[in-house]
Image 1 (cartoon, rainbow over the protein chains, first blue to last red):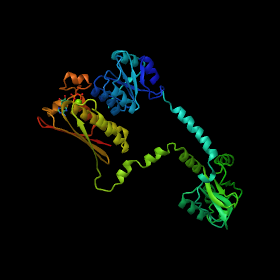
Image 2 (cartoon, each protein chain N blue to C red):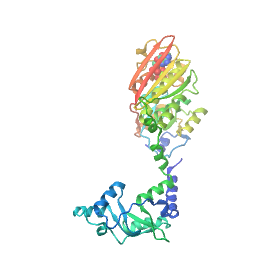
Image 3 (cartoon, rainbow over the protein chains, first blue to last red):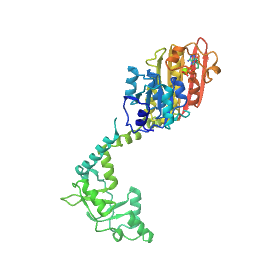
Image 4 (spheres, rainbow over the protein chains, first blue to last red):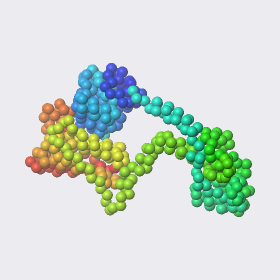
Length: 116
Length: 308
Ligand SMILES: Nc1ncnc2c1ncn2[C@@H]1O[C@H](COP(=O)(O)OP(=O)(O)OP(=O)(O)O)[C@@H](O)[C@H]1O
Ligand SMILES: [Mg+2]
């Protein structure tokens, strides 16, 4: 699935655009708990989370995740934004709740993460 | 959105420009190995082999009289004529380039004549000053463009190489990071720095990923459950060992703490994205060796190794 399709599917706002929207994202992982994210996450995946602290970015960094999407209309904290910018990540924000975000993406064929 | 397309177009344009700007003499090899017409094909074989050449000019008392290639040599050897002189096999109607011609002429001549190499002569003195192959052109262009060339250099001189070259029975590079307890603004910073450093050292991305996922989990445990501590990484050829030490409350039941889902984290920690009880299991999954020692009231010592 391309980044463009993800943005459209989630009706997301682009908070930080660091990549070509034609970039292909193959897997996603969704959780508000970071260690839960890290159990099954692939490099280059999309991370869906309601956590907007700097740890959302550090978690993405360690797992080589390239796109982070904040659900429930959340916006990243200032320090979070700075860290993401420094690391060249793509940040999105959708008003949809977690369940619906995942459901829509899954329906369109985006797969979940595999074991680390 | 940023795009690499623009960059690629710019590079293509620059290549076009360069091929007109650069002169043959800037790309040619000046140390020319030559043979004489009376040399045997067997002599030629040895010369080509010794200097790793695919062809060479033939010189007679300072005059360029022909050019002989490895194809000529093979044909001669196939016919069993290793002892025949080079002059029997060389091409006498060769094409030359002037040293001051633009490279674009050379490219056109390569296309037109299908030769592998051109002798380069000085326009005034008509003396042989160099030899030009397609490889020379490409090398020269890449240098000018600095495309991938920088990357190649970095790859060629990546620190892991000189690291491997350091002579000792056991070379270890130590990196040390202090971790502050309860500081969520900076929790993750140590592992982030570690990640950058391991990358710089040229360690494989997959290994770096496992090392830093594990170190990040350990770092978070220090931030959440202790007043802080120290994380050190020992980088050796073939493996990285991380040691995380704190003087916090300690873990009463290690076996239990290692269970997936076991957590004593209070609600405020969960609100900050931790407390799934998956940290220690993740560390175990990511590492090849793991040792966890803890004493209640004294602190915890975690050590794990990842093979690289
Ligand atoms: N350095 C430490 N000092 C004291 N207790 C610790 C330390 N590390 C872990 N623990 C204890 O072990 C438990 C399990 O740790 P683990 O990292 O697996 O899960 P967690 O930190 O609770 O949640 P998560 O890592 O999923 O965010 C913790 O809840 C805590 O009680
Ligand atoms: Mg933990």
